[in-house]
Every structure is written in C-alpha cells, then in structure tokens.
Image (cartoon, rainbow, N blue to C red; front, side, top):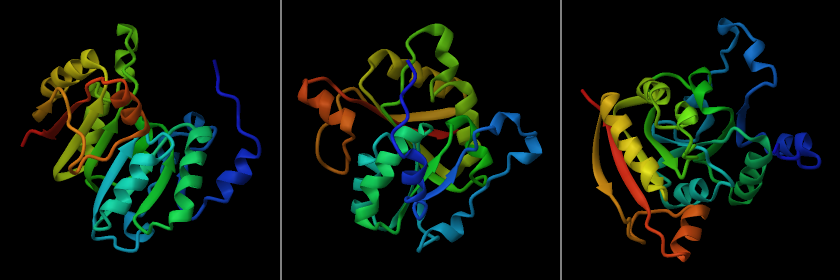
Length: 223
C-alpha cells in the first residue's frame, strides 16, 4: 500500500530548506547519467566543515540523528531518507534544535553517489534498515553487494559502517555479505547493552521494551 501524501507536503518541505539541503527530483530516472549530478558541497553546508561526517541511511523521523548531533558537536551528521512523507517529520523535529552540525537529504540510498562526493564520509550508520525477508528482494537490503560497493566509494580511508538491527537472520546474512564483499567485520554483538555511547532509535526503544535483543556490528573495507 502506498503511503498517502501528507497535507501541504511541498510547503512544509520548503519551510525546512535550511536543513533539507537536497531532494531527488521526481523524474530522476528519466535523466541521462551525466545529468544526475546533484553533488552537495559538504565544505559549504556545515559551520565546521573539517569535522568528521557521519551518514545515516534511512533516518526515519530523525531521533537518532538529532540526538547524535546533540551529543557529538564535534561531528557533522547527514541524515538520508527516501520518503518525503517521512523526512519532513524528521526535519520539522530538528528545526527547533538549530543544530549547526545536522543536515538532511531526501533521496534513495542507491543514488547517494549523485549527491555526495567520493571519500567524504567517516561513518555510515545503518539503523534498523528493512530486512526484506524474501530472497527475491535480497538486492534491496542495505548490506547487499551493490550498496556495499557504493559505501566503499563514499567512505574515507579508515571509514566504518555501523549496523544495528532486531532481525537475527538479516544480521547474520549481513555479516556474510560484508565479508564476501571485501569488508572486515568486528565488534559483533548479539545483545547490545543500553547506555554508554549508544544512541537509541525509535525502533530500538520499542524492541527493548519488548525485551528483544539488539544486534550490532562494525565493518571496514579491507585495505
């Protein structure tokens, strides 16, 4: 079922233009490859461009990105969400906080190379991304081969992927996929503890309330 568009969506998105720095055009796939250049100048959009850049793919309503930006003012955060209906809520929640180190991009993950320069990202956060349980949809998983190659292009030297999920099958599939596609996987955790430096997402709080384990890992491209 398709999500019904929110009322006054375009006006609400326009009102967030100070933090919503790029949007995928409606006819993106009709453009020629050479016309799909919407690259953001990451040195211009943040007050402290020398800070490490953290990319969250699939930011939902923005809780993780907002809390992380508040907790780590020494890092810049770019939160990506493909659904305009969803990212508008994230931007509207972020606006009152006036965080100079948080911006948003409205695009599909597979098109990020059209919006970001190569080797600009220090961390990629994959928080509770859709596991697409059917095998026929495996290539849509954000830890499938095509995405892992894209991340290699975006990650700076020493850059790391951080994954959290509640789905054990998807988690173990991701470990295999990462290793098969040239990544070192480490800090594998089958029951991530609360507290510490961990910032919880909306889904994470929901799953913890049901006493479900949270699975987490880190991964880096092999040198």
